[in-house]
Image: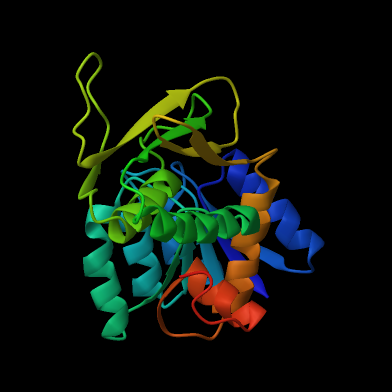
Length: 250
């Protein structure tokens, strides 16, 4: 298939390499210095675009994909206030978007485990949840999109927690809110840790990415899956379809 890549940094280059190894053709690459390529015949010929850019440019990039009639897979985080509007456009037939805060298969399994554990821990009020996410120093937004997804799933399942927050340094966290700590260090691809602490013991689940390759491969698989489809989709929709399961990933 023909793939366009939007955001041609380290992730974009890795996506291009994996896509070519899977037999696909990269027909267009777009970065900050050639945004006019959205108007090119090469871009409009793409079966799907894969967008990993920045929080400040993602929405405009997606809208330009809609305008060109190119389905778009987006893994950029930090712009989700605009997601309801874009989803509404997809529902009205004005575009096709597959969004994921994380395209790693392992992370999505971890998310399923997090949802299950949160439902169990809802009945054990002595346990208090918290979260830490660790990423490389180049990541601009915080908490990470994956951390937000994990947090929102937890908030939905646990009655005594009504929101998540990034506590101010030195300030006691709200007992009804899930605290999320973010750490930026070195070239860490991504680590997420969810802890349930009680006076007598502690339960911890975590996922640690070894490289960005899992994210890139998942994004290419998402582009393969979304080709020919119309509407708004998530990674959970794709994985549920590919694994012939219902409800496991959502």
